[in-house]
Length: 311
Image (tube, rainbow, N blue to C red; front, side):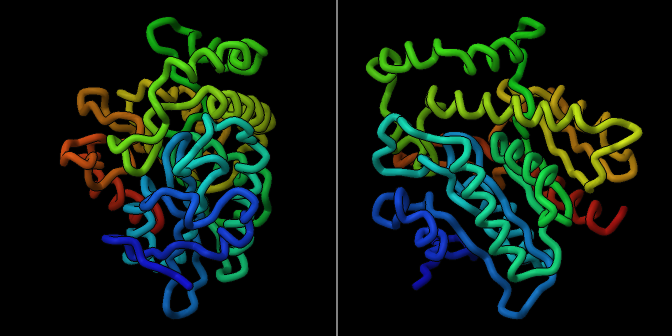
């Protein structure tokens, strides 16, 4: 049985819940945070997997999914990542990078079974997972779409701080301080953000740091003589204080210049990290804005169409 989500053309993806029944079900996941599937009434040769970011849910990618489905004729598959979207996230204790990969691989396999060409894209950590899959899976034979991709953590005010944060997250220190932080941090689930958690949990951040290390290794395997040869559309904001633009620049430096399309929002526009993918603002239960929309969303999607058209 499928069920539509209010305001979204996609449906709750029950096949996905059946695959990952050990930790997901409709009853365990918050309303609005479900894995989603958008399939054309008639067969299509184009499919895309869209992956959400750390602490949020497929809802964040739904406006982009709608565009690919309605305007571009794609089947769209949007997995829910391990330990995300839950009514009771249990402090994300036990979250695993390998499960995130398994979630995305399942979506890729389903997409490949329904279409000739499979593309992939994602927000933030979902962008890093998308690059990982595009670089390692022959099933991804279409384009790669990156939105605020966390190929690097942002530096902040101190040059190499982003790299330092990544290294610290890969040590034993987070395991020591996590119990303390859980006692003093607000609950992960709140009405303030119905489609994600209130903050990035340290357990999830550790797994992200491990993913970044793996994508760093993959990037080092490419060069101008042996470039990353897939088509890439990379949207990123200079105002992003979460994901470093340096990671996108590094990928661009080892990609085929004819295939790489950067789409950078100037700092003056003040478009934040997650807002890049939002057509409409996210509202809390009191009708207040929890996450701002991207005022240039329509222009970004037009740029994606031009990218696909080869313009």
